[in-house]
Amino acid sequence: MKLKVKVCGMRDADNIRAVESLGIDMIGFIFWPKSSRYVSEMPAYIPKGISRVGVFVDEDIERVHTISKQYSLTHIQLHGSESPSYIRSLRSVCGCATATSPAIIKAFNIASANDLTQTIPYEGLADYFLFDTKGKSIGGNGEKFDWSLLSSYNAPTPFLLSGGIGTDDADIIRSFHHPKCIGIDINSRFEISPGLKDAAEIGKFLKKIKS
Image (cartoon, rainbow, N blue to C red):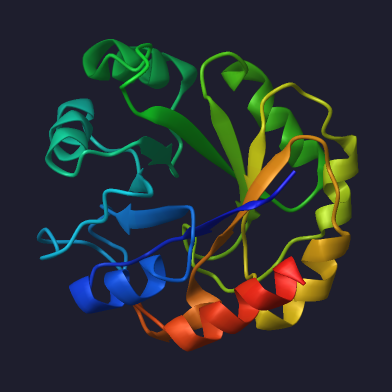
């Protein structure tokens, strides 16, 4: 199965166009005010031909709903301590059970195999999981966790792999195989500055993982 590639933490219109032209599958906008990649106003260009992911951290559900409609989000990524009941309420407000409503991605920070048990209460609630590195910040730490820990993950929910992925990880990505891994999420290690990606470097990376 071809791995999807999500580029997260974008907000500059020209940069979005340049990265979109590389043939990525998903683009992420961060709506957490404490992030250095926070999207405080709508970029002049929002792509329509690829998936649009809004990243939120313990955000008010009504605000998530409002932004989801404004940006025509295809996915809502929850990167905080959102509870299963929060997701139930979010689905009710956003109508996430319909074919045209955003899918839910629930992120988990991983440092040990035991951290994977966090996913259990979310089975059947989230459409996808995202496994990131447990670090000082909520995402964008630029560090990888031990991917071999995922060998113990045998739940039915598909996941995206995140956390410090850079150009030099192309070989290990090509050799990483898990039946539930549908894609990778890249961010900080492809940045010129927070929120501004090096499109040329991403292009090189894509060629490497597809070769």
